[in-house]
Image (cartoon, rainbow over all chains, first blue to last red):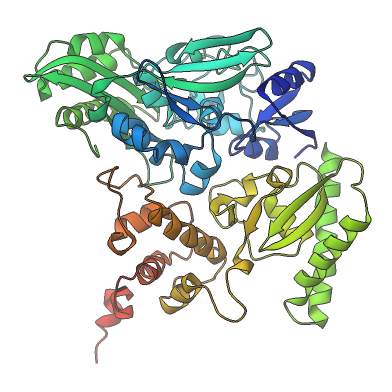
Length: 331
Length: 239
């Protein structure tokens, strides 16, 4: 990898100031994705600003009764937190289904939001790629696109967001707290990541020099029955082909409220407000779940090698909703 | 950029050859000890060179001062600077687990960790598990249960298993844990749990059954008889 200078930030403010001054700098915390990208010359920062020792590693109750997770809490610590296990089990399960224990020990919450696609054409600098070099083309469109998007893609880019953790965060309407030279602001989870459109080089809506300080979970009583179902090529340690985070609030057999997000299908965790709306007031039964699944996938645009994802996603939605309706657990 | 890369590679190669030559004339353990002593001497005598940073690491209970470039991974620092070649470079991309070490007691991939970021931390490698001639119980269990064939992934597998035991004791859950709020105790750790929890370590020889048996031994369970691990046709050979 290309060499860089290294500084250790001693406060969030210090990190922001350094990043504002040194335009080609990168923050680093867990490094599980960034170090890998440095090795293949995908990123060539002039400086790494080590934020791993900042005081952003606590999980606290919010006044509203939700949880505020510091950006530097490790994935392992989130998954094993007693309150997250009890109140947001779908978040615990999503994290545990991702990567390996070694990576989860290193990786942070903020870094998970910032990780970039594992599209093989993006990763291999021999190929052109609109995400890497805007305007150069998208070989995935006519290449081996088994892992790629079936929803929300553009002519420029059909990469998918690789995170498991972000799928329940999207379903739970989490809020991303960020801080920059202009001060602190909050971004709703659905506004954090972007669809590729004509600017596939941009994964998210962070401004230059901004740093993620926390992810905030609102209180959602029925998240206790939430599930995360992940389907992939091997039983463990692989990215999702399809994943579903879902939680249902049911009273007397009738769905009061539904939350659902899909991973492995788009450039960001995919929500379908239409399907969630449809579920409201319907009986919690297979036919309802099937209809909701049809709605989510109605505008799917399968590619040459990933047409299987459409049916797989529908079945996954049906199963995730069924298990959530039964009270949750392993989907 | 290209030049940088080449110089880095050549330096490593030279160090490697120097060590190999030393090894040829002496005991196998000598080069790592020699190298570690050299690293300590170099660093205490010399200020960091241009582009280098001084880092203090406690490796296998021994304080080490290193002058290194920030781009050096913990794995390369261990292998190239300190001669601790037990930790292996398999994929170098965090996909195989051969480089697994413990940092402050937690297992990590040393190939994805920058050495400068570990300043002040305690690192345990495969070389630091035995007490003198007495192997760590996990090492013994791997030998007792044929938990390897070629041995390349073994240092990573053993470090991962040592961490796994601690994680189970601390109540960590896994993706296959049925009840998140009541994770399994060591004595109840199922085969499915063992396989899931070690899925970040690949074995190209596919010694997985032996590895699972080793885990069962160190968790106080009864591993299957060695014959249970043999292929059916081995047992059905005509008399």
